[in-house]
Image 1 (cartoon, rainbow, N blue to C red):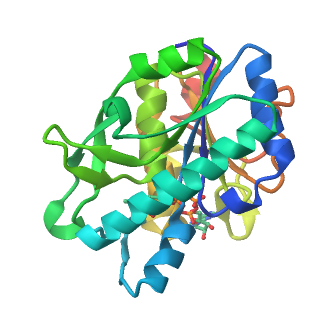
Image 2: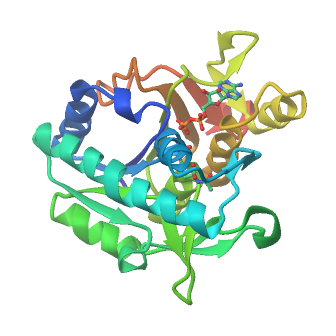
Length: 261
Ligand SMILES: Nc1ncnc2c1ncn2[C@@H]1O[C@H](COP(=O)(O)OP(=O)(O)O)[C@@H](O)[C@H]1O
Ligand SMILES: CC(=O)N[C@@H](CCC(=O)OP(=O)(O)O)C(=O)O
């Protein structure tokens, strides 16, 4: 779908996002685009897990999810964080509807590796007609990354992979990851453009690790002819919506392809 812009707001930066950021999302919609927000909430989940004395650990940027961890993640993501983002859009003058991947079977999932990760799912199907209907009503969908399988079992989904699946299935024009760093950093410098091959190299040599891993993997999985680049940018310095001149790292398939097309 043309004009769809999927904006993934990372839990690392969500509490810091300014009213100008949400205003820029509303302005983007007023200019004829269709923004969709997918949010994370890793630090807020960590905070509640700690309070409840529930242990959790990450494997390659994904949280091992037991039943207790899933309950906690679902409460934080679908309850607190989702409604905070919805409220911020309303305060900026827009209309938002908060959903989890379970509502309207928005994100169907399958387990990634139940033995190793527990209740962690990867998206297999997105209810794009639900999103299209909301966008036709001028609503901004705000999506929490909890998905469901065909049997109705809930799974914790990394928000980067949820955003990528939504962007891909909708044929979005743009996918932006808003996070707590300026982009992909190498030796302290923010890289302007990075190709798929370079990403593999940076994963192998340890330049890219932890929370950046699901982001780059999700970005690479969405690159198609209609979505030729994915942006990673800092939530603190965002100028989203201002003539498209955002700063950060642009992920592309290969340099050749960009010059040819
Ligand atoms: N090469 C890299 N460049 C920038 N950040 C990186 C890199 N490799 C790993 N990271 C880590 O990834 C983090 C962003 O991922 P994450 O904490 O999951 O954020 P979010 O909640 O926004 O998804 C950064 O704060 C940084 O610690
Ligand atoms: C499976 C998995 O890792 N799920 C994530 C979901 C939230 C998320 O992705 O939040 P960020 O944007 O802050 O990373 C988690 O439990 O932390």
